[in-house]
Length: 462
Image (cartoon, rainbow, N blue to C red; front, side):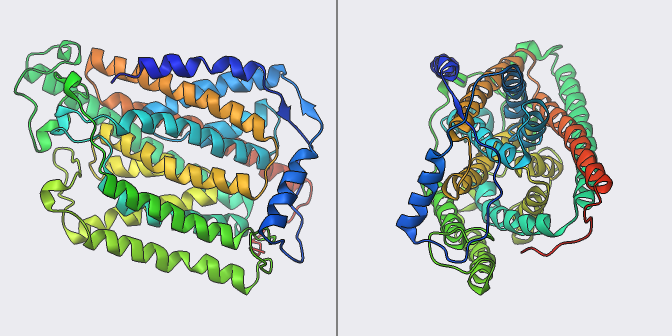
C-alpha cells in the first residue's frame, strides 16, 4: 500500500500544532431551557458562547505529554482498526486534566481523525489475495450500521439510568472477556500461520511473500499473508451504490438526532425538553433501523458479488438467518458502546473475529464502521455546543498522522513476516490497556461518589 506520500504530506501539518492556542473556559454544565430557539437563534447562541471563551490555555507539559501518549495510542489502535476511545479518555482526563465531558468530546474528534486516515488507505485498495476485492466488507457494514447507530442511542439512555458502579462492573467484565477471546484468537492465527509456513517450506514465510499460484478462493485464502505478490496491481474498487446507502443511513439518523436535540431541549426546532416530542423522535430510530436493515437484506446483490470473508472452518454467512448475525452483533456492540461511552469499534472487532471473519477484513471493515459512528458523535458535539474546538482539532490532526504511521508500520511488519495475526494482537493490546485504564478510572469515580455521599442508585433518564 502506498501510504508514504500521504504520510509525508500529513507530517507537514504537524508544525501547525505548535501555533495552536486552545480555547479554554471552565467546564459548564448545560442548563435546561424552557423554550428552544429557532434555527438562526440556535446557531447565534452557540456562536456567541464560543466567542465568549476568552481564557486561553497555552501549551503545558501535561498537554504535550498527553499529545504524545495519544499519538502512541492512535498508532496502535489504527493497526487493529479500532477507534481508541478507551485509551484517549483516560489519557485526557488523568494526564491533561480535562473534565470527563470535555475529554469525551475530544475523543470523538480524535477517533474521527484516526478513522479518516484508515478509510483513506483502505477504501482505494483491493488486493489479489481476496480475488481483487477491497478489504473493506461493505456488506457487513451495510447490515451492521443501522442497528449499531440504534444501539448507541439505546446505550446512551442506559448510561443515564445505570449507576456508575454498575457501568464500571459491566465494562470490566465484558472487556476482560473480549480481551481474553481476542488474545486466544491471535495465538490460534499465529500457530495456524506457522504451521502453514512449515507445510509450504517457507520457514519464515519468505518475508511475507507467497508463491505464484497459491492465492486461491475459498477458506484457504485466509491463511495467506496480507500482502502477496502482485500488490502493485491492486486497484481502486469502491462500490458507490453501497457507499451511497451508508451515507443515506448516516444522514437519516443524523437528521433525527438534530431534530431531537438533547434532553435539555437544545435543538434546531422548538421542542419541550425530554417531553413527548423528544421521545417520539427518539423512538423513530427503531422503525428506521428496521426499515434500512430489511431493505438492505432484500436488496442484496447476487451471491457472487457478496464479500463476506471467512476463515477456514467458518460457516457460510449467505443464509438469511446467518445474515442476521451482523445486525444483532452491531446492536449489541452499539448498546455497550453507548453505555460505556466509547466507540463501537473496540466492541465489534472481537465479535467479527469470533464469527470467522479474516483479521485483515475485520480491521478494515471495523475502521470503516467507526468512521460513520465517530463522525456522528463529533457532529453532534459540534452542532449542539462544545468547548475547546481548536484544541479538539489539534488532537485530531495528531491522531490522523499517528494512524498513518501505525498503518505504515503494520504493513511493513506484515510484509516482513506475512502474519495477519499481528492485527489481532494489536486489537488485544488496545482492549487490554482500555480495560485497565477505564476500569481504574471508573473505580476511582465510584469511590469518590461513595466517600462524598452521592446517590449511587438507578436514575431517571431526564
